[in-house]
Length: 71
Image (cartoon, rainbow, N blue to C red; front, side, top):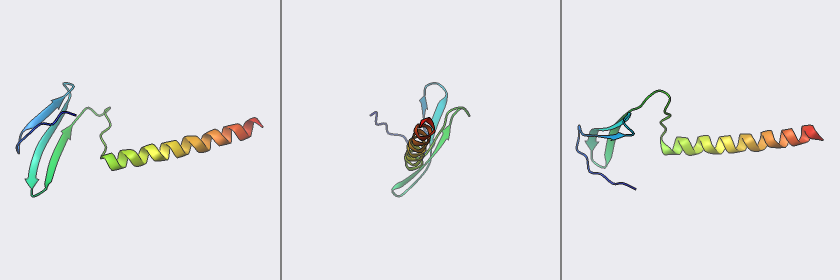
């Protein structure tokens, strides 16, 4: 993991096309802005993990249905 220090108004560039900016610092919270191409999905981690779980569950159910259809 790369750890960087940034101040309000400063940014980080990733892969030449994603910019992460520190917008506001208030106590122990930091507001960040992310500029990325529309084809790059950007999720909060908890939302990403939920999507992964739902995808796994869906594939599991689809796999069971496909096996039942073979029989």
